[in-house]
Image (cartoon, rainbow, N blue to C red; front, side, top):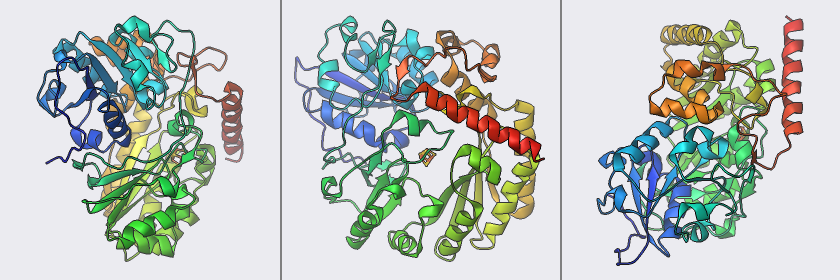
Length: 467
Ligand code: SF4
């Protein structure tokens, strides 16, 4: 059952805005960005939500009103694979109003979706909604800051300072459980070479403690940021919620940030399992990924956590440029060692997607046969070692790479064309050639990206030479 403090009755003549999340309700309702957009629109128009698994995305959660009756459809596309459902919802709903897409997937590269929407918003839309939703026709959107209709040569990402947090929210059973979502910050101070978040939410911005909300009528808070433990006052924030008797759920934890005090607070906040993302077992590959977490950091963190949590979950990647089968085997070796500290261990492995706007963008996606071998090896070794293993669906990652790196032609994939026709998008890219997403200005210099790419390449060369 939802608690919704924003819902209002529709009055004749009011503008109707559909906020569409083309994935599951649990993820959508736990998205703090969508909560903010919803709250803001409801101040001057009627906004209702649509989720892929509620009425198949065709009727609103609030009143069951069909999408076709709305004036605007704002789609938030978080993951590349959600594009399929977004296109399906548009088709089945017969929506005739103004269609705009936004979200990280759009900020990364909207070109494959171009033919399906009137416009795309590149950036953080809060503060711009009044202007966008005041247009009478789609053609008027062109020229609004952050809008790309396909006709502009360039678009600059919009971002703003983060100020006072929402005081009220929809409270529902979402991805973090039934809780109040607290956004601690945007962007990330780290420099992981594979990470899109670092690039498309820059610069890192923290919410001031004074701007955090009073949380009432709910027993749990989710602390959300790309890397929440990097908040300069994270411990103090955590402590203040725990002292008020609230359960806590941080969106992620960094191994090198954990210490006795923090772990005690997490335990007191009823955190049951600990999730860490070493990404690779190899020191050399870790340098390439710039994750800056060593196995020492990881072991020390797990030592502190031992006996306090029921489960340890570890995220790794495979398909990292220069990776050997020994590096992959090393994942299980690390997990085995950590299992002696926390007996229940799960490994989750995903292939590296060379994402646009990152220094990895010029590398290719690993060969499918090699990835399959690596995953098979991990599965077998995990079973032998009594480690839980969560394996990726390789086809989904291939699609993700194609949609992330394609131009307008890749839109055919949503019209039923086989992904096999786009396998060329899995290949390495030529740094001399302009890329489909180069028209988006994410406030970084291409030269800096190129320099980081060259550094990674020379790191790989020296790895080869040292055998
Ligand atoms: S992977 Fe995590 S820590 Fe690294 S830059 Fe991205 S958000 Fe930050």
